[in-house]
Image (cartoon, rainbow, N blue to C red; front, side, top):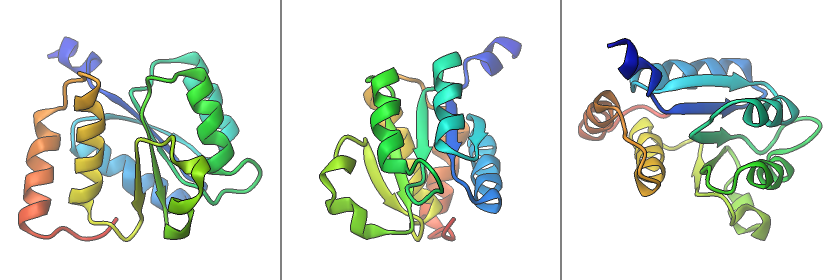
Length: 148
């Protein structure tokens, strides 16, 4: 099973809110992904430039470099890597600079919807989604899971 562990999709969680980062880290682990966390956009850029990341979950409102600027820079590093904007502010959805993101999900969204957006983005690129993620998404959908 060691080899399967190495092949888990790597999800980078970028959020300046430590509590929210930890919640998402735990959710991604439960779903069978390999989560990595970054507290800032510059830290995320460093991670993406140094290792394989299959998907980025990106907050917008962060001190210093915000998520909109980070989105462009992340895609400059790897155009094939999906970036899901995950923010409390639905108003950014109309900002043309966010249109390069794979998906735009608000933080009031259920866990099932977030897991679905991640699954769809990975599947679109031919990346195998862990069975645990599918099962958790289905359980959350049936139970109308709590917001994350």
